[in-house]
Picture 1: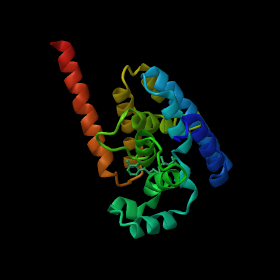
Picture 2: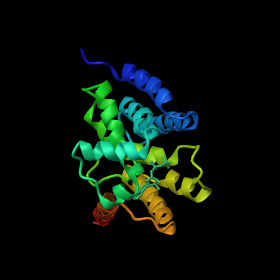
Picture 3: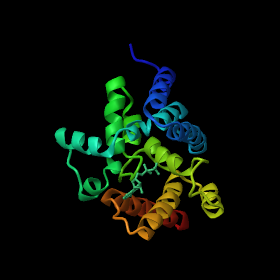
Picture 4: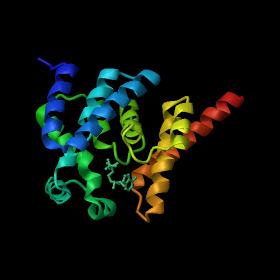
Length: 203
Ligand SMILES: Nc1ncnc2c1ncn2[C@@H]1O[C@H](COP(=O)(O)OP(=O)(O)O)[C@@H](O)[C@H]1O
């Protein structure tokens, strides 16, 4: 029999508490709550958003070197950015843990966990919500008034993703960090979509 999403949430919550530091666990709880708010705002399934929120950092408790070795041993293609900064692989690792617990975990939740750090073009609604919720949950140090005001004004989930991505990419560039290709492709895709939307409205 398929386990329901509430039971899955409760089991992942216990696992997240066990695997993560107290502050990282609190971040996952706030991300789940923020995800529920975004699901209501953008008309997505709240139960999926809540589960993906509590699960998104399951892989964050493992040492980055172990995650990198596991990825290589499993035959996953590792990009130069991931090789240099294996923390980027914690979403991939987290999905392995999640699927080991629930082989029938919903695809939308797995996608959200796997791609929550850098995003990827074509990702679905729940993945976009977790991408934003992870960045905008109220405990984040980088939140300032401008970011909160801009986020609050967004009428669509895609425009919220653009605000989050622009903030995140500007920060990474200011630190001289290499940016993952998928983030740039996602950004292009979202910007193209928003131009098409504007053109449609003008017609
Ligand atoms: N698009 C990206 N390209 C390159 N590095 C990134 C990108 N997005 C996030 N990172 C880096 O990956 C690491 C993990 O990100 P994240 O999971 O958001 O960490 P945290 O939850 O601790 O803020 C961070 O060091 C972050 O700077």
